[in-house]
Length: 323
Figure 1 (spheres, rainbow, N blue to C red):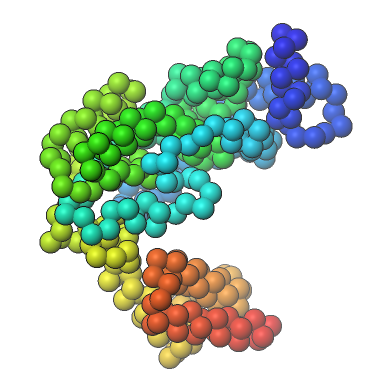
Figure 2 (figure 1 turned 135 degrees about the vertical axis):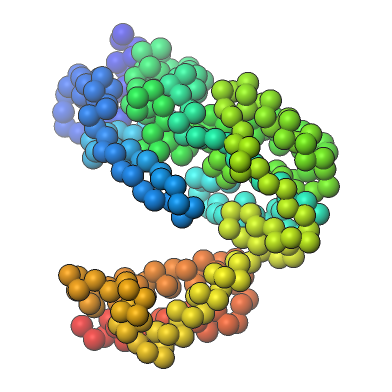
């Protein structure tokens, strides 16, 4: 127990406080024993029409989890094939390797976060060679009802680390066959000239060994004469957003310039009379600016949307000056 106590003090999971060390350790064990009480359930509607359930930790548990992320989890190496939830990586980094390929195979892991269990997380923390009591405590602090909660700051990195062996094994297997592989959260993408059934069988077997299931309903093989999209980015010839997204952004900028932001919000039904009109206009323009910035991140030389970016900046400047 002395080793566990010294380790917990060194990890500074409650931050640098003036509280006595034993008091902080008691707090950690109290949190781990009653962690269910420190989550708030949030149900969101997916763009696809389904529901996504998040469990958001309260301020105390979230603070501890952030310290676990910084002081423990950040020390683990990540697989180069994992592109989500890491610094200086984006959907573009996930999509770019698959540009101009003859085939793109998209596979999905079913119920990804809920399939990462207490056992997976405990096995991960055991690799730290921390005392057994600390390993168990960390696992309890990062799990909710014995699975990985989508919504905790530790969960994205833990998911990547749990999947590291899978990523490395399937990535090497693909490299030996000239197949490109990347994984973005639960979305796996394979591209090149290959037998899709062979890839699916290999992936299914590796996932099964880990306690995961391949989502057969979301498996899709896309050939070069079809529109190939990877994490929302078209990759047939060069990375770019879909025509529908580009068209919608083009229309939004035009309507704001032609009729004004306020009129546009009323016409689209996005105006809320209960909120400050000016705040709504600013928030909308900032959102529009962010969408254009994302498009230009993918296609920096797109002259049309460089002009659109300038136009929105001018609208924001005018809106800010009207205060």
